Length: 434
Image (cartoon, rainbow, N blue to C red):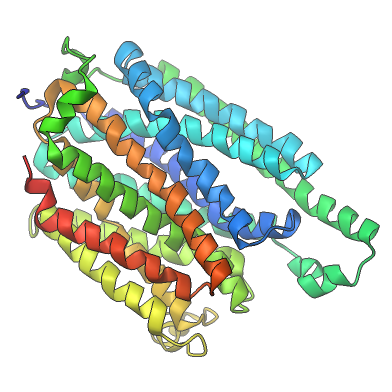
């Protein structure tokens, strides 16, 4: 069944771009806080590698679990109301961190992360098609790249803030230091560490509350696809659009490798003895910002969206091989690229892992417009299916944590290779399937 392509609405896109830019900053701030939160909770709650990666699993599995209910809410109430509700749910999730921090209960931390992820699912499902359809389709990847800079810019900032605010004096919590304490002293020290999260998440709840009110009053226009009558399009109709479900599988692989690169780098650096392991996510985010800047410059003037996706897949395969086969004893890449800045050198495998940020940057903005092309009234339904692909951020990092426990952190990164192979296929052939 064919549907008419979405025609951008005849209104200024400046206000929606600015507002959604703020929302994308929130996405990045909340999402990439996990990269510093995982090694922190590993110490505070005394977790192993697999248990620590449950943080990423619970956070991202919400995108799969909640995508179907969210698509129904958006179809009924509209995209603006979905943004407001998503922010309100995130406020609840941030507030749940306070009793979790006071009790040190890992299960309560996971519940708070699930609620935060539910709110983000609403926001992501509403804002991604909005930013695509608010302007010309051929420049959609460029607009999403702009949002990506904001998103990953937040991801660059948040580990630095978290490390300065929460991860100070961590030498007192090393394995050797904790082992020398009596059980009662150890529990008291770990409880004090956990309580460090109260103030940051209380501030987050206040900021999200203010943003909820702002979005509620903002005069966001409806887009053409919101005004079409067929908002209850059946999921079965998507079988006629292989580019959509192949796109969802591609996003599953992409989000998995993106989360592994951003959230496991702290654990990897911690294992290799990197002193400032809490800020390593900032390296990955810095390279992602560089990738988005290249996307804004090159797309669509110099390269097409499929070409950008193909280049991303090739770079991902090359950098993954670097993670697997470079020596942890060498710091050649850091000496070459960041040594002149006076930044402490990090081992080559960790630097290659950070470079995956450059490879990953243009995958999301390239896949979305390719997958949603020509869907018309099916846009909301297809967007929900694509959002379900974010579950890769839950499943693949958890699988990585299991593999790391069975062998080593470095050897477990072989998991990246088949994921980038799938992205390569979608860039070359998969997006053309009809």
